[in-house]
Amino acid sequence: MKRIVFIDGDGTLWYPSKTKYNDVPWWVYENPQTKGNPLTHLTLIPNVKVELRKLRSSGMILVLLSTQPGNTKAERLESLMRKVRHFRLERYFDEFRAARRGPRPKGRFTPDRKDLEMLDVLKRRGIPKSQALMVGDSYANDYLPARGAGVDALLVNNFRHIEGSKWYNRVRRKERYLGSVLKYVK
Image (cartoon, rainbow, N blue to C red):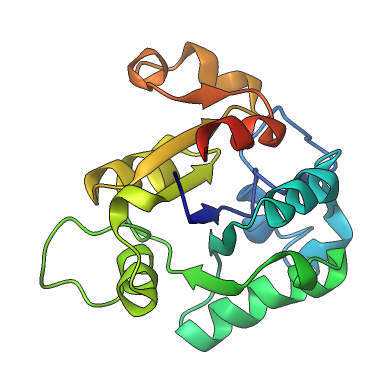
């Protein structure tokens, strides 16, 4: 049984309303027309709050762990918290972590990396990897880092373009919507 669920933000909980499921969500932070105020271009994925409420009521510890723009840890966390406040998601999560952009920011591949988030949370809370689940929409930023760190992962396939990718068939656990997470935590 799982005790803690890490959930990604961009693409898993919210996405750019202009492109919806047809493009990766990161573009909204880099496009000159949207990067000044990306909040006005983001919307929650339907039923997110309902599904988060279900996970909370099941007794799970929920950690929002999302790669965010910013040069410092404080800038990344502030970027994440602006979205959390905007969408009024504060009450659904026990903790908020903003990972840096780059190779495998959420899981650990080498013991000398001190800036990675997932295993830090588990260690601090005294929870073994076997009782954790990472839920996200990105193979490279969510699924692969979690598996590389020894944590179970679930790929939420919100984006139509990934089904044809070369790695998609290698993913063992994948679902179409966040609502399927409960069957992986029991």
